[in-house]
Length: 110
Image (cartoon, rainbow, N blue to C red; front, side):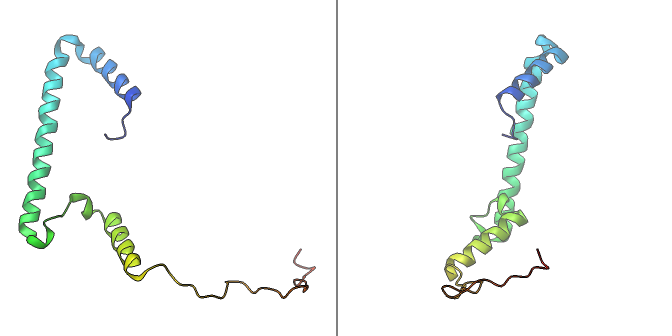
């Protein structure tokens, strides 16, 4: 969650105990829990209202779908799946020399 690992969480906890003290820390933890719960409810309500306003075509809409990078990646991958893998032709991008022929040499280029 938020890219915070166990060591970072331990440092935050130690700093919180030092700053707030062990007596007030439980109350701050409860307030933080309430705040996170309210934010989660607010985001869920906004998502539900957006789905309701957009109609039944967007009933499976997620807020992450609104990120332009995700939307572009999704549409490009969908288009590639429909078209199949790209066909670059049978000819390679370079010319193949016949057997025994030496490649051109430019002494000024080396």
